[in-house]
Figure 1: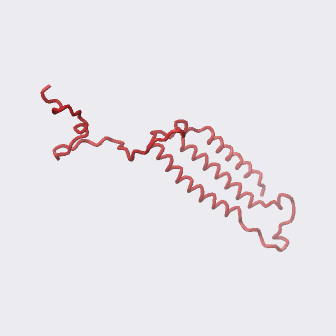
Figure 2: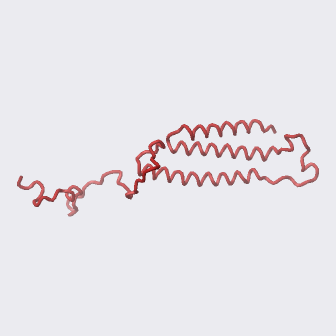
Figure 3: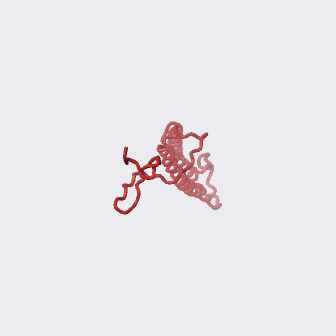
Length: 155
């Protein structure tokens, strides 16, 4: 097997991921670029494990001399990277959703790290219609100015 082609593809994928992280302004696209870099690392790990160094140097395989074959460490590390990538997606999307709830945008340039915006709790996206006939008061009635007389009476 010629490992040059997967190494070049992994380098291109990693470079494309770095470009995406540095140039994108949308937080979701930045997370996708990080995933692309992690997949490039996975390809590199599996390729490096499948094409050992002794084959590239022209030495005989240790398995041909009666030694035990090397363990599949590249595939094991790849599984760890996949688990870390899944955790990164979960935490990253939770942060992006909270950012959208607080700021109304997922543009990274609009995020101010030097100021704190307290979370006021869940905000209603759509205003609920006022209940009529059930004795419920509307929010407008609760915010009327208190001038000593009823609003709209006798002016």
